[in-house]
Length: 249
Image (cartoon, rainbow, N blue to C red; front, side, top):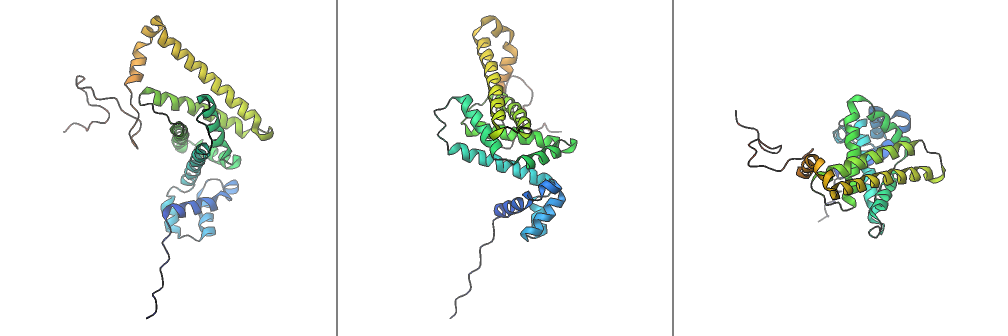
């Protein structure tokens, strides 16, 4: 009795998305992160157009965001491959930012920056930068749960954004000027952290800043997929928290 032919395994959705993204990259310098780029990638890969558009329903915007997330993943992999545990934290942060930028193509990032500068897409751009800061701190083993979770990511988002803009215009060999710029920005952050420590140690300053420090301490990091976060439940407050269900009508 003849053997029945083996059915070839169905391609995974993630693999299809990667194929479309990879095919799109060569078109971005000419057509930007656009529907035209997605259409060209569909033609190049021969993937069912309906499936490709289901993977990237917003066209170029979703392609750009997928490329950004790919860079975050490459940064994580690069950091995991380095023996960075014995480095100072400021040097580990600098290394993570450098690895993140080295994983990107300047022209593709320029096109993405132009896209995210448009008002309808600016929130997505800000969310992407925040996601990169979160990915860096997560890769570095950050365990903060309170307001420090937010302040670390807010400060690093600023450092990353400024360094990214400098990197896009840097023509120095090996982007050496960019890495020097990055070191200066991190040194400024470290000075800020030292000032925070002095406030904690000074009894007068500690009283002056007691209220904002208490508010920061009361914040809690968001649950997975539950931005922007929550206040801890306070039974005596009598008001519903951010995560509480709405009152019945």
